[in-house]
Length: 380
Ligand SMILES: Cc1ncc(COP(=O)(O)O)c(C=O)c1O
Image 1 (cartoon, rainbow, N blue to C red):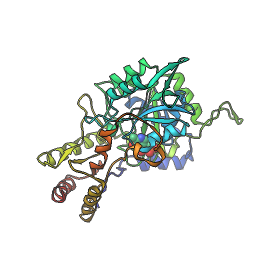
Image 2: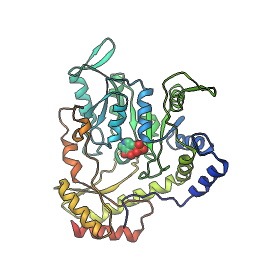
Image 3: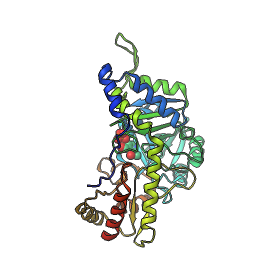
Image 4: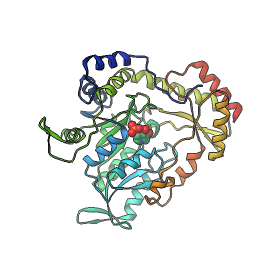
């Protein structure tokens, strides 16, 4: 079976894991968990980094750190992995769902501007969503597949409305925005090192940013807000710190980030050339104004539908190829039926069940790519 996306663990992973066992540092203290923070800070151009047990806990913590509270609203795109919305819900807040732009599959900044203008008022220095009467507390754009949205515009809007920006950059480590480091374009940026990401720590996440006060607070909160070794805690904290074992794998992976991103770009470009003459599909969007991280690759059917995607996946499976559909938008998910919605979510609604993700592991061979392309052409 040629898998969709599996970790490539042929570097120093084993060596570093053995060191954790030999030194008995397997929990949330140790050389690797400190080292991974320094590595991710460097690779994302950030001053500070806080390692978390997952991308989801990182997002939750980042929102808490930005002051999001129960009954608040956080603006997110509807087209995302459900963890983005879950992080909002874990704060007791409600997502306000925006559509995406066709060009990048990321939050539609024009729509964001219109929605805020038409549906909010200032009341006692609070930005209130008129219909729900809830406070709007933050904007959380998602860097879909490693593509960054129009952050110049989103940042302008955020400044105008005094909203913090927490970027869900789960799969975007290695990307940039108009040559700028990711840490320069949001208040906090959160990565995931889940098993299917370009670099993995088995499970894990990282919050990066340039505010020392805020990042120190987040680290404190992530380690049960412990003040002294004598079980003294000054806030309701979380047990969200990454372990040294996770970090050991992550450090070995990060040593190869550039190589892995190169491979992801090559895979994207291979599929582009392999399918460019086909009329019944289009390809995944590439960012025009910066370096994307090309987390996943695949094709978009002009006439899709989940049934059709399933049928194609089954046929490819018979040929030894794993392929899958992609994110079902948040507004179509049962737990978020009551989320606040922008006037239209039509781009995401039309797009999601036309997407077919194809094998894109960083260890896929040239022969395997040729085989996948041939099989996809036959099946389509
Ligand atoms: C866009 C997005 N947000 C959040 C997450 C959550 O990260 P994690 O699985 O590490 O909790 C993921 C991936 O898993 C993701 O793709």
